[in-house]
Image 1 (cartoon, rainbow, N blue to C red):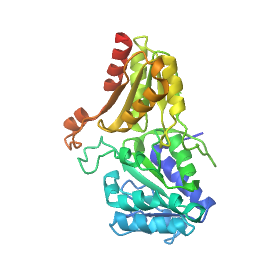
Image 2: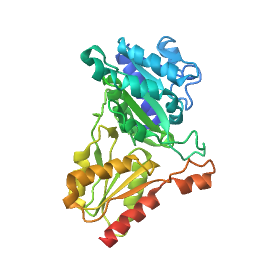
Image 3: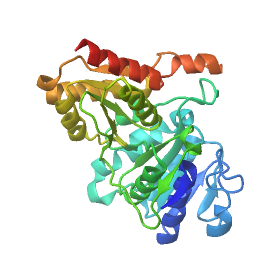
Image 4: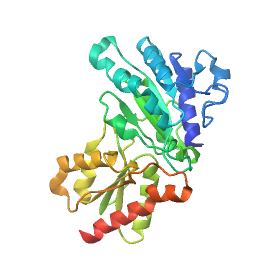
Length: 326
């Protein structure tokens, strides 16, 4: 298998799907000439033409609405929102239209569109360019929400998302863009809605997704030096959530830490913990623990940003405490 950057794996998926299906088009701010904020689509307009790689005005609500209409009439648009923070400007089109139309009109109205967006902190971009807003999306019935942690999954999940007949929000960690990993060549897909056990263990379960999976694996490696065997689960898809894989692990270990980069209150970790309590409460040997960002806007100062967002040390300490106390 070839080794690719996470960002290049996303581009490979886009190119392969555009070559496979002429209904796939790209839309977004500065994606044609400049290649988007992180250069993922640089040169694609030259290869596929301006009709299929379209620059849009700086109007997220406008061009997401155009994508919804294009999907309804037979195309498969992939829309890029430059930073996840700007998704707030398109929430009416996404939550009130894309997510609901199939439920309102059945087979008459499918919305096969993907909305890609970089998210998360770690680059000192400050409170308006560093947020993790996936909890808003997961709370919206009708949206599929995907957040890959590796280059391999980024390719496989994006290809599945583009082929899906329902709207998918594809969340890309800005920090992971520069990570490399082996990526299968050719028509490789990963099913939506399936979590993955990425490290096996018997003492404690760590549930994570996107960049926090990398931090969870670092924590598991550190815990192993103290003879604590942590099992790490990468959710990969947040909606629909694979509760069965999480519950099977918790039934084995009896202890669980859930890590996310978003804010603590009302977050993805809270949802995972609620599902664990509902599905396997009798197997718990200790209270579930959440690790998340502080409930404050993400600071621009690198020092304060690191203090406000979780890392492997926070996850490792929480897991060790559970094992030692219970």
